[in-house]
Length: 229
Ligand code: ADP
Ligand code: MG
View 1 (cartoon, helix red, strand yellow):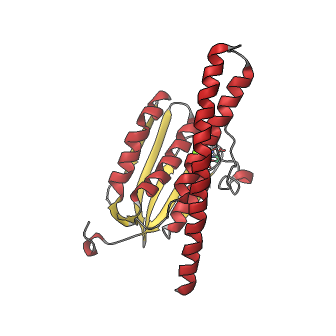
View 2: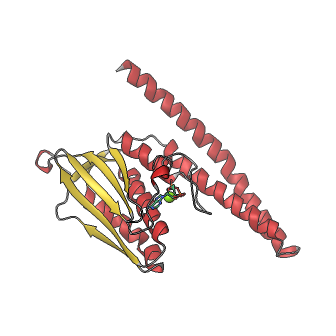
View 3: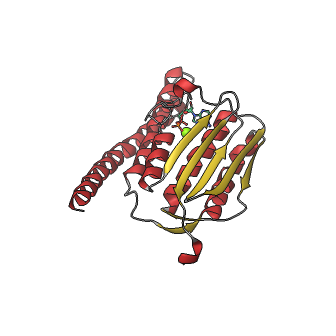
């Protein structure tokens, strides 16, 4: 127990440090962006450097926000939650983006299950997974979110009809900053893995190119009869 305590203290120091760095970086970035906007209105507004500078700054902004998210304590806010409503919230949030491509997001959840999670962090997991699914497809089709019980596990899957992940990249996609997207940060699946593991869960990527990708989130199963929510 003592070792655990030391470890969690170290984590929170690292978290504080990261939060501090991000705080220091974010504000100057915001004002820098404002300056560029002003300059752009004055001289040679079409100069391609401006566009590149703005894109780079926007990328750092996104990275900062994503890193800030994982600098928060990871398991302090856990409580018993029904999983169905959590995923429904995420689908509602991402439906506009999906509709831009004529993508339909289905939820297959015949039984609701109780999970022990930090709600905002676990929602972030499903945001990352469904966003990736939309971005991978970028064309009309269906994404299915499925929730089922497998023995002592509650398994939530996100299944897409995109191009799949080639076998030689499967182990790479969870690495920080690995991205194949022009606007990507390569942090989504790293953060997703970290959040799930901090919930004593397991994250699996199944992809069999060219048949799309399935992401599986395995969480401990809790019998609802023993729990009040
Ligand atoms: P980002 O989305 O910013 O690129 P992620 O960590 O979320 O970062 O994903 C890393 C990479 O994994 C993506 O750039 C993409 O190459 C691959 N990937 C993730 N999800 C999918 C998916 N559903 N289908 C195909 N490739 C995917
Ligand atoms: Mg992503």
